[in-house]
Image 1 (cartoon, rainbow, N blue to C red):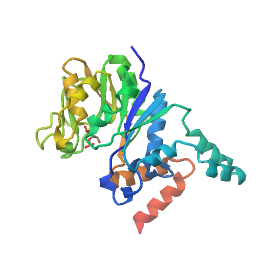
Image 2: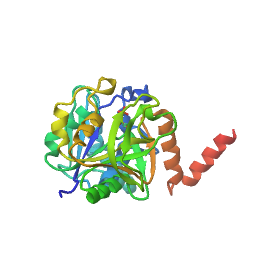
Image 3: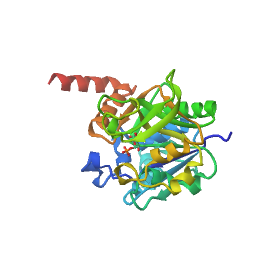
Length: 290
Ligand code: G1P
């Protein structure tokens, strides 16, 4: 079986849930504590063994490429001022030459279409999809859990988590053959099920390991929920011939494409930081008492 070496990150979305800031700043570059959301997602991918990052971008997202490139003046300044720690931190995030590809989606036709745009760079091997709005943490990085499950099952993996009551209609939802432990064979999935029709309380939370056969299906995929070309619909078609398992991963998700999700991420990650945790706790407690 071929290893999972590439990750597709769809980053063309407009970030309408966190406007007006995202009018000029890519939502994936909004800071959580002191670094962009995307920086955490790329670190999670690296920890899962990903060697090549395929960003599917759109108009106005050029700053994402700049973030993962040298900033000559800044680096010179930091060096001249002896701020070597900061300089090293900035340099440590840079990709090796040729490790990142950027593809323009050109039209916002849906997640399935965004993934399809990456077909030539991914080629004929299993690959990860990571929705960068979703900042995910766990005892082992969530994508690494998915890659391990892919090795175990030799098939497609969708990372899922229990949905807060009444929220399932906002997501893709999976149906399981039976439920025992965290990794279960799937029998179906549906994108944005009407309230009361969801097949389980497990929603698709933003990490996938897929086989390359998905691309041929996406090529002819018709529009689905919301008038968009849905990845969920293409996966449901692939499931007719290939196994899919849902992995209820160990960890926490922060939906950073949402105002309160972004706030939660900032507070939670600041509290956990060895250098900031105590000060962050004091600040939050003072606010709660005010
Ligand atoms: C997408 C997926 C959906 C998934 C969700 C997670 O939907 O299509 O299956 O549950 O991300 O955030 P979107 O948020 O783009 O509507």
